[in-house]
Length: 238
Length: 309
Image 1: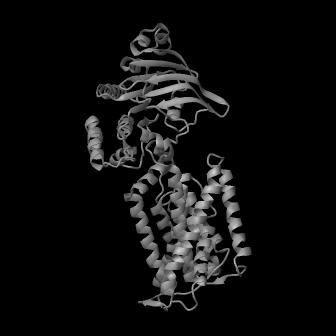
Image 2: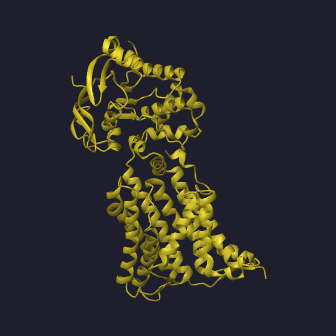
Image 3: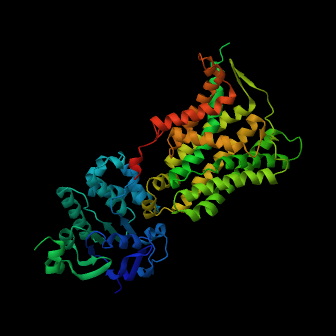
């Protein structure tokens, strides 16, 4: 069986500085795969390249059997790849409802869109209560919920979440992580980038540790969680 | 005789024209953060496009038949030049330092002026523009010239259509998203290049309506008419809050009114008698710009720059 997403020897550079130095990994349908690592490891660059915002200097990306390299960002969404970006990037002066509708920009099925908006409100009740409010007035955690809800609106085959817990209170972080578990249980395939290695590894099927642009260690979430070097470097243990 | 109603009306007419041109500055700035300094010339070519269509029509044709054709002709020329400028001058410079597209815009502005000056027949001085076939309309103590009648119908209509388009259409929603966060807009599946082209096209369309209005209002068009009018409209866009279409409309009206009031009444202030009259109109317009930049740099309806980040 071929994987939903296959990345082969991907290299991405900003000018002369190579941020991703030939990484390979894959995501099977139904899996949660996480990339962990410190700031500057190349995790966000990897996701931005997958969604077409950055052009790779070399390498291959196969999504659902089709090559993604060279496809413009606005066409990649329609193939079933949704990206909830780092820093949330909700549209601040549009309402919550309008943000969610934009997530379904390429869909034509009005009824289905309404249903999915309702589903986002069920998943995050606070969004439903404030649907008419400008998204920029939400708290960081609420904006994160909106960003995730918006990404789901395209009915993606693969959901990419970039640092969903960044800058959130511990309670909010737990909520977001619980939602990811819920999404996983409902069969959503997720590629998760996190600095919070503990949380990410404990819910991931597969994990990859990135350091300065390369994958230095791969394994199942549980294996990595108990790996001594990972515990030392990322889980803050001596 | 009380001249105030007439002066207010004059200000509104002038302001409507500034507002129409200002839309082009503000929409383009809102989406690509570029001040298209060639926009005044796009307004000018809109006027010349309309004139060209009129000259191509048979002599003695009714203005009522000619007018729609002139509007379409002017719009075609202005939209083509605006979209062409985006495609061939500005798009290759996207991501370049901000000074590069700015200088390009100024160069394009000069090139368009000189192209009309040198190549349009008899355009080295102003060319006479046809007039609407009715005299001034009297409303109480206010006299409205035929060109202003066109302006006062066309400007609010254009603005209302634009406001509905941006708020309610799918493309309008995509424009708002692109203005607020272009990268994320692409992640939604929005073709932001297409949105940018549409912003330039709408600006060109509105500039053409303004260019036609200018010809009808002043009875002539000239190769350099876009220079001061463009600067005024840019002032209007900044005054209203650049990036905000309602701001462009409001800024245009406020600027037009301020100019009319200052021209008519400033000489009545003791000690200012030599500062009145039309020769000083532009001075007061730019004084207003300086005051806005000093005390409310985000403009009347502008948002704090911080939430753009």
